[in-house]
Image (cartoon, rainbow, N blue to C red; front, side):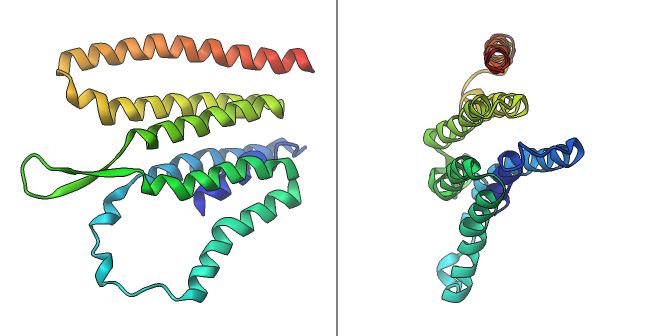
Length: 202
């Protein structure tokens, strides 16, 4: 619910004339979307013995999905109908992302721990790229910048989760530096091109 409503805050109030209101809502959505995505990829809840827990009552389950899916879409439709698209994209991510993991054995014990698979990293990066694209469509520099930053965070998440641990410490740090320099240059160049595109369209 946090993740989906974050998309509402980010996109449904782009036309808000009061800069303070827009700034507060956008900042809240920007932080909440990152936090919500991080929670969706935190598979520590899988350690809980769910088979011994009671099932959620049907009425409560319906209420939960009304809050997660229906209510955010209604708010988006009420304030800015085109924003239904990005809200739906984030809703689909929120549904799919918790299932994109694999179980790996730990090094020092007989247990196993869940870790995100490549598809999880790709999904988050694609959603970040979508926000940058949506910023171009809605002529929003804030959304373009946010999408680019989130894409960079998705790349760093993949690097620290899947690459850095498999390399030597010195080499991994050198590669990280190259990633910051090269990747940062490419992303900044792309960001400027997107912003220039919307400025020329005005």
